[in-house]
Length: 227
Length: 171
Image 1: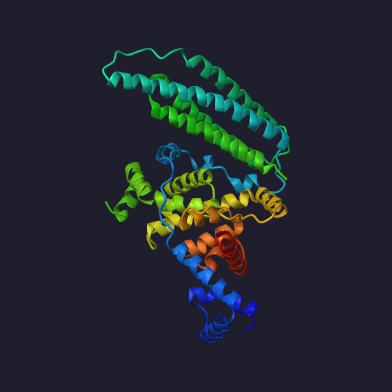
Image 2 (image 1 turned 30 degrees about the vertical axis):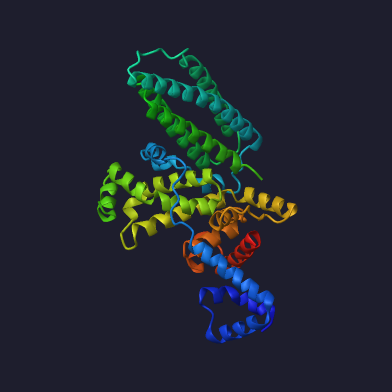
């Protein structure tokens, strides 16, 4: 057995699945070939190291709240990626990418404002829990948030109109529209809830996660038009 | 409360029971997604997708296999489906990497397990998926072939390629 034949069999040997006759021939070769022996040792060391890898790794942040926020979505809200990626349904990449970038920029600003509002509310709560008298948060983040959100919605509408003007299959278009409608409904519900309870940090986080889902959907639609 | 009690409750719409299942299994699912994707953000997204899909498909879990086995298979399908949907993008990336030279670079010495995780993350997507499924998760080539939509021989070739790249990266 030459070196090439031996090296082809080293994987089965390391896994213990090499037939006895082959095993004898490979072992005989390894006794006399330094290079193949080194390769066999490296392979065994690699597989030993793999066996020692941890079976569990906790994610860097808790994912439950984001998952919980998605459990009520109807099945249609899960983007049918195969339909979007199907040949012949190519989307206008330039328009989608431009709209997607606009959304990323605008949403980053909305995120910043909402996060600031959350931080301010938390700071207020902390001061209260320390026995300190409540202090009004500096400035009102509501107006900038509304302004940024209006731009976000306008960019979304622009993207949707861009999609409608293209030669897109009705099935694919229906999927995109259904997903956007579900996400928009969720955003509206979260806003209504925040109106009633503006200091609720959990609602704010869910709102941010929902915005992120809208961006994910639009970015995915943009990607499906690549190539 | 045992998994055998939590699953029927979650299937009946009990979110508290489903949250317990999430708490018990998220570490395994995230580890699998992280190694398959090689990217923490992608892995968190796919972990979320897996649990959302599990919630919707709980009525299809018959209990013949362990819940963890069913859930991991779901996670693999979620990640591989995403791989397929972004296939064109990845092919371009692979081409760029091939022009730039070997994709797997020697990892800094910071403990073998850490080095190995980094080297796995740096593997080309196809080789990484097969390596993780076969060597880490214990799937057979026939199972991998079915899930990934490739031939069993391709799975074996990708495994050997991944092991060779890893040995080079860690040597």
